[in-house]
Amino acid sequence: MVTFWVALLAISILIYLLLDGFDLGVGILSLLPNSEARRRAMLGAIAPFWDGNETWLVVAGVILWGAFPVVYATVLSAFYIPVIFMLLGLILRGVAFEFRNKSERSRWVWNLAFGGGSLVATFMQGVMVGSLVQGLPMINGEYAGGTFGWFSVFSVLCGIGLCLGYALLGACWLVRKCGGAVRDLARRQIPVLAIGVLLFLVTVFSHALLENLPILHRWIDRPYLFVFPAIGAGAACVLASSILRHDDYWPFHMVSLIFVMAFGTLALSFWPYMVPFAITIDEAAAPHSSLAFMFWGEGLFVFPLMLLYTATGFRVFKGKFTSAPGQY
Image (cartoon, rainbow, N blue to C red; front, side, top):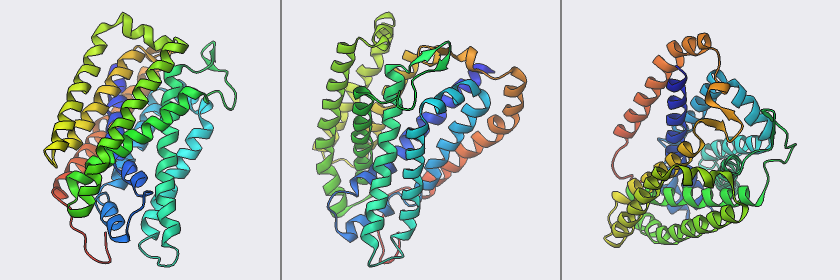
């Protein structure tokens, strides 16, 4: 049962990264100079998906709260400030998404709020991931880092890197779903963003080597982990080829594959810890009775229903998006 809930949590987080990643990325790209028609088309490309995408964050949070309460308590104790700012960013972008289409003179405010909320939420997610990779200050299984124990140069670098990664994913989504000027602009942005992500990877890996982070030893002890970066490198080559060929289909799938490989590398680097390297999966798990009780609701009903809803939404709204005046 513990393995079942760990797998479900990992799948929920991965789905969230991929789905909310592209619409947060589109939000970040909307901060760049854009005409109203182009910005409207960008938002129209994510309009049927963005609120459903964010639901996966709720699913992951419920699983963490119910199945692994020790980790839930520890992570929130460490990340009160990043989580609050992430949620405020998500709320702000949700409000701005609806309000900007109803306003005229203040539309620029809501445009800024939508893009700014996307940027803040993404940055805070990257900071939290970076803090976990670097290792939280822990004493006897309890967080001991204070209010800003999560803040470091490494975590900030990871925040910046995730902003670049989501923006890249968002640009690839626009290439897939839009046409005309929006697609052409997004296609030109992809090489720049891809180079930015590559520079981030080189910088963050060099920083990890200088600090001799414990996670590096996991990669040495588990050489099979290098399979994931190898597949990611192959996906990057296909991405470059598809951009040169002006292909609209493959860029999004290849960047998604890169995200999957990065997530797999981190997940298996952490194993069997949920809070590296202080709390293991077995130590964090709720009693078997609680896990079994959750299975009949979250595991057997909510999670499959969410998968069905997501698959149906993408099936219904497949193909290119064409904008119409006055609506998304």
